[in-house]
Length: 337
Image (cartoon, rainbow, N blue to C red; front, side, top):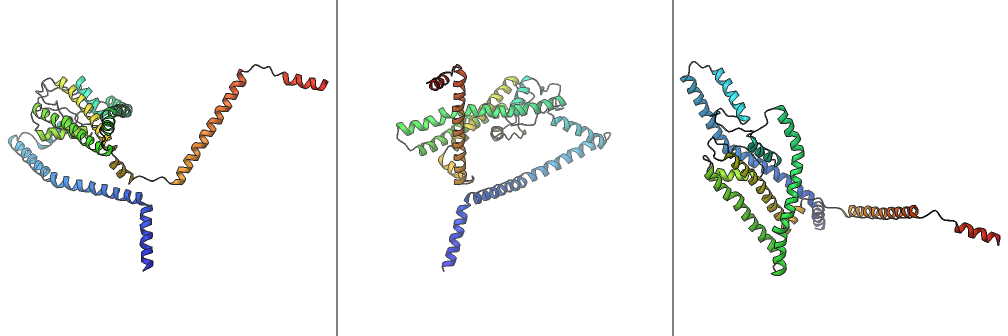
């Protein structure tokens, strides 16, 4: 009876000792299963629609060739291939004479904002080799610069939006800081979703001719989450009014919405429950490592103090005049006596 109990207790101690490793293994397994689950759902939902679209295109192509017998199928294939290549670069043959340019200033500003925010819709891409090379250099410099800018902005906003209100209710009203933080995070999330998802979705569904509310909400979520699939891009209609002003407004909306999303995420990450949940998957520091770090820190501080003392002595020697004759004269006097 005692041996099985001893074996179970040793197994429990082994699991507790390596608990972060087990949690991390379950995290990796759960992520892979979630990835496979998404692939299965997307495939089962979208594959029938893709099949119907392929059949419809085959019927249209066959009917077009039957109505135009003078046109050979290879010629039509070559024309369609060229049209699709141009469409991938953001150039369409439909009403191309009156279509808006893809690289005027407002469109280029919108493209630069999507590059720096890593949204990247893909509806407009550089055509020339020089543009592609500049896009690489611009992204290498601009993306870290954008991360630095967003971090600095969010750090300042979260003090006034999250930390001070929670501390105010905790001190002046006597509420629990943990409960106030949870309620504040929920309210902030609701306000952000309303201001940057529901209201813009209603505006986009009214301004864009072919968008309903679900498609507009889908665009807002895909954009502010920096996924940027590019299947819905505002301001690309041929009869779009005030297109330049509309593009500038969308650029400002993307930047402000991204800042708001980061503020909400940072607010939720500061909750105590989420901090405890995240620590389950982190590697725990051993006591020996902590002692080594403390000893290294003490050695560095002691060496820095000794270096400072030595440098101060050298500075004093450098500033003192070279008059050190008194000990020698005193020694000579002693000899004479």
